[in-house]
Length: 244
Image (cartoon, rainbow, N blue to C red; front, side):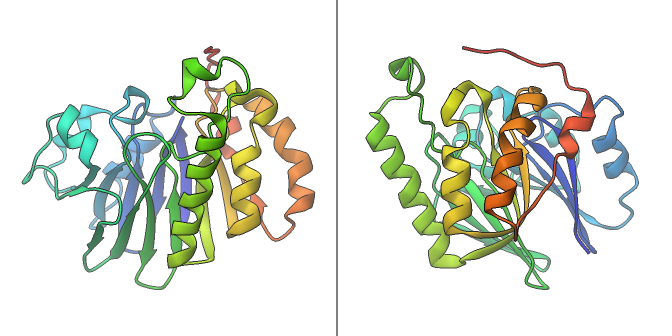
């Protein structure tokens, strides 16, 4: 059994038969869904998986759960000063963490930190991109990325190849769909879906601008009929944020 719960921005709580995986916790939803899931998890193992240190992906509260396993990126460890034994594992790209419930592959990102691919004991696969995306800003490029658009695209496509060396199909994918990219909002999304067979796709990093995201994604659904698109985040009543 796997249930994906959208929480806020890039945070998801993934329920399995024996664990609760919390990705990139920044803020809880208005109805405090995350805290409810944590408090009602019973004997399920709690994990916090942190892709990178950026403020919109991190909350220091994760250190308060003594029984949780913290799987954090190297930059989160350094910038947020979380070291072992508080951190169960500090991960760099190409690292692998494995225990009795899951195996996690730390993968490259086009931004700081890592993306992650988790394989559960039953073979179910879960990918959380963190900030891995084709950040193809056609306008004000120099304000957003430290490389050319061609270099950005090359890095992203190389990262997709890295995923394909592990698996060519992923059951559950959480991936940025960022309205700041304008007409290129779905560039990375479509490149992912073209190369990685995806069972369920969950948009994230949308800055509450769900009307724009859903409108852009709807035509894409027809191009990838084998993928189920989940817009549960649109029901969370997040206040839209408009950033340059």
